[in-house]
Length: 463
Image (cartoon, rainbow, N blue to C red; front, side, top):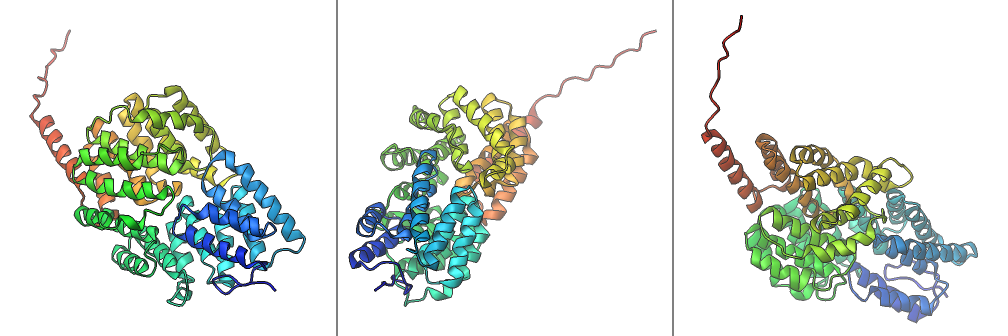
């Protein structure tokens, strides 16, 4: 007799050990748990003909944004399709297989839409809700994240066994759409329901970052380290958030220590981990901090990713790493590839490359060459569509800071102030970074005003 999942929906499973492993898979995934792949492996060992587990495996691999894992995801898709064609999948499970197919084809937006269509019929399916959230996050669709979760949030009350995790997704969507007070309230409530909800914990940290409450943010994270100890590499990102708060306070030695002991302690080549490192080193250098040889390991790893082209967000952080490590030839090849992608249209990320990736890459190239006026123009153009690269406001802020830095180095004080003003309006508060930049602009303007002007020479007409 077919069993039902934790949400009350039927599954093509009859083995209770497989059901137990499947439930653990979903819960671990929602909690960003390091045990997620182990539970999925146990599910597939107990039920090798479970199409939904194969489809989920494929999505898991695609979310990692690594070109060498695409064939693994394709194999999972082919297996799931074969099972479904033989009648071994129900209607809901077949929709997951369809979503994986769209994702494999590079149509991330369509994959997320299919997840929302699943939710329209099976609104308590927390896995579909989290997949929609995760894919839209990569696609840079903050309002889509919010609309998706708010369409079903009423179904995730106290009676839902994993409702707290979806409340955490709601918190993050609220934060990314500028509703900071509601995001904080929602995130705190989510953690009360699911104490291991690292996503909700980090959502509240985002609120404190965006509203310039660094002292509160430090206390929030330092007092709850046990809430993300169970995590996969997401734990490095939470440590990154703690470092951001110390950075805003100008505690650069603390930031460097967190970088070495937590953020890059394991030196993985996951693009999200590389982005943590590259963006933090860039921020430190903007503040005039000597980061030593830390760029080297990031550049070495990024040199192997020049042709990936899976996620523009990843590409731009690989580029930061290559330029930081002075890998000019590899950086130029990566820029060329991003520009080529921008000229194509067979993948959602090609559109992103066109609208944001290519101009940002050109801006970073100009910055590296010391052509700061050109760097500002390209980066300012990219800023118009930078949300499309995915990630959060906090993550993308490194490119905003580089835009300001380029303008300042080019002596474009009005332009730098305008970028800072837009940044502050979005964030809702003036942080330490903006204070330091505004003070620097005022000082440099004052120095310019004090510089003696060249004497005016009057030429006597000849003849």
